[in-house]
Length: 390
Ligand SMILES: CC(=O)N[C@@H]1[C@@H](OP(=O)(O)OP(=O)(O)OC[C@H]2O[C@@H](n3ccc(=O)[nH]c3=O)[C@H](O)[C@@H]2O)O[C@H](CO)[C@@H](O)[C@@H]1O
Image (cartoon, rainbow, N blue to C red; front, side, top):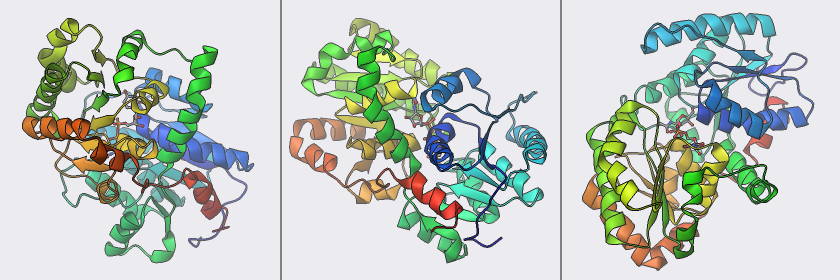
């Protein structure tokens, strides 16, 4: 099959394992179905309960769900289980193509399993690189290896396409299409008011308690979970948040705390007592459903995060993002002026946030930046390529 030919008849199979993969593949699923294309969805992840609210929100019913019997937390074991189980699914589904997303272990295993069965692979969000093999680990190598296997490379930006060209990927296999995170965020945000007003969506109670503070326009959304930030990084981020809250009585913080004890224990040890004392102004809550997270971003002056997806969503919703890492594989955010890399140094975080909130001009300029991750029509472009129309 050439890079521009069309898979017909048999389903296009979308394989996902984690929350961001579901969010970012949902627009592709919707667009392919809208065009009458047969689509099948395989869920290979662990956190089925958390995934269900996403499937409800995006109206997706997975045809296949893997029940992996993990005996330990090793990535090799997970990869081996995924490979075997996904191969069995592919043999049953006989897909015309398999679409994978990004850089997780499920991404790489889904691509490997398709490769062994000679099924063409489409890689969505291709070409992101930090060029540092272990930052992030194992994602940097997962995405690089997935690129070796893919047939269609859906690069979100020209920069990502250039990274692929440097690795020798043929130009006619690379399609610059934008990032589906933008499609999902714009679509989700457009539905929010109606969902809230109709009662179809209720914000969790800790977020309700933030409402009185919104009038000050000084809500900050914080998330942190990357492995390289476990320990001292998360501790320093938490201390910066404490310092900011103590210095500015109008500032409020929404921090959905990742469930991993390596994150949650540190955050609660540093901020638990302050959260009680501030009675609602500091919301430390469990991970939020996606619409609630979008609500936080929409109501925030800025976001502090080490998440990849939130960098794209911040840009889509015109909310400046301060990246809590030493590097980002999304340099376009910085080049566009919509974000900054601030790392995890407490003084630096406090200094940057204070400056932005005090000097409104800089924040306003960041909010006015053109979103470098696309216009919300990425899924259409991907569907065009798969149908041979592009
Ligand atoms: C190194 C890197 O950048 N890797 C990325 C990684 O994903 P990530 O860093 O973006 O992961 P998270 O931060 O876990 O998820 C983010 C999503 O979750 C939503 N969210 C968050 C908190 C919450 O309480 N409720 C929510 O709903 C949020 O809005 C957003 O959409 O894998 C992806 C897949 O391959 C790749 O795209 C991607 O390169």
